[in-house]
Amino acid sequence: MSARTITSLTNPTVKAVRALHMRKERDETGLFVAEGLKTVIEGVETGHAPKVLMYGQGAADHPLLQNAIRATLQARGEVIEVTQDILAKVSRRDNPQAVVGVFSQVFKPLTAIEPAAAPCFVALHRVRDPGNLGTIIRTADAAGCGGVILVGECCDPWSVEAVRATMGSIFAVPLTMATEAEFTDWRATWPGSVVGTLLSAEVDHREAVYARPVLLLMGNEQQGLTPDLAALCDVNVKIPMRGRADSLNLSVATGVMIYAATG
Image (cartoon, rainbow, N blue to C red; front, top):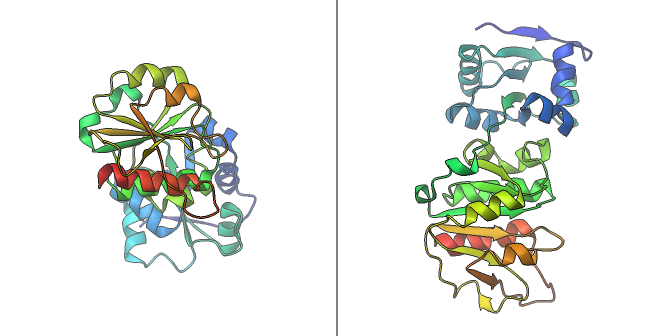
């Protein structure tokens, strides 16, 4: 199969892939970087062929990589064998993965969401930490959620850190972006229950009624839900704290809520 070899760190393609670590470049190109054969294969198997596929010397004989190479070439993407130094430069890691793919970002419009398609959807307001976001996307995938909606100014789901944390689920879970105003208008059409979490809530999360499809609305790491968004919920619930900690990490709390809503 046709692939070219690059050994220079100053090659334009290498520079272009490295530049995708910057949000400005990702926003302008509509591309993102996914590291590791498992993640790349998740993309291929869900119909997302790489625009660029880079792999280390000696890795080409792996059967799964052969599948990724075929998919890339069939989609007229670029397949490149590179040195270990280039992989480290592209991933900005001392021990880089042997495979790196560049993919197109895909967003689903609010109006295209079909509530009946899944028992639960997740909306995140101004989530700040890419590791939290990636973990939530992975959990949503594991639980069979229909999508994740990013409300307001959130961290970038296509950052390398967020994509790493999804472990490939970035390709399986539809992502939607919306302003607070757009989300507020759209929420009025939701046919099931909208459930939020608040430290001041009086309803235990295990006792709430989750009328499917459930829309879980989670606030950000520092402030939680704003009063305006909490008011959009049919019910706000709390997750009991039994030790000295007064709250849970956002990704953990969201995972608890997802399984409460889908259990």
